[in-house]
Image (cartoon, rainbow, N blue to C red):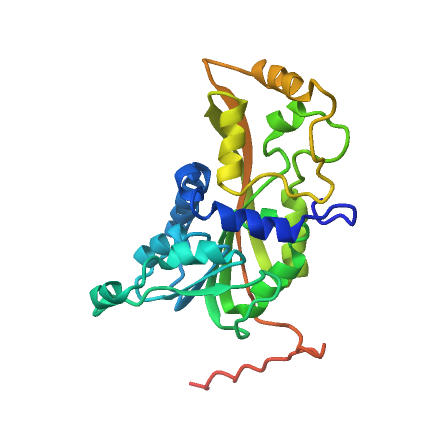
Length: 297
């Protein structure tokens, strides 16, 4: 499980990488856009009319636009830990831009924040949307507890994350010695346990595998770098083992070539969960609700 005590991610490195990737991630965001499309399709079958939406891990704001189209009356909030990502989400804000915005629907509010310490009031959000953000947390439980806190009763969390089989070809090709070369991702069942621990009820999850193909290993590594998604495990090695490490990795990966392309697997876990009426108060006392008796006819 990604929350194991021996597993940690370098948060400072993550913030720096995603900040640097703000200028390039959209050009290689094929996976994120496809997953967002599939998440949006799920909303066709869920009855919810949110007043306030939080996009947690909003990046450059692409999902905020889609949420605005689906829920035009909702106030949208985007949160991310990389300030340059939020700057891209905000776009140009000169005088001409502000004049053009007059009379248009209000744009999203943006906040630079840690997912495990959200600067929002209790029960202030109706829907929390999180697309491929939870996989950048070594332990998702603190963030899930914060999401539960800021959701109103009957509010919903909709999320996607990466599962353990993600980049299995790359993991197999790179030398296993000297640390983790592809960092671990949380199993769907462990994530379900974390959702229940955080207080959510009726979590619904499923998994599917998406395969992207690349011309060569360098193209895959370039996409990971431009999107900010390179390995950030604290235990990551600082180079390939041995003088022939890169060549051995290329040959191993090359053996997977089919129809002129090399595969990269992404295990996608999607799901949603609701915040139900609380059964206990904050100090642990049981909550008893009394319903009035129906009037006698």
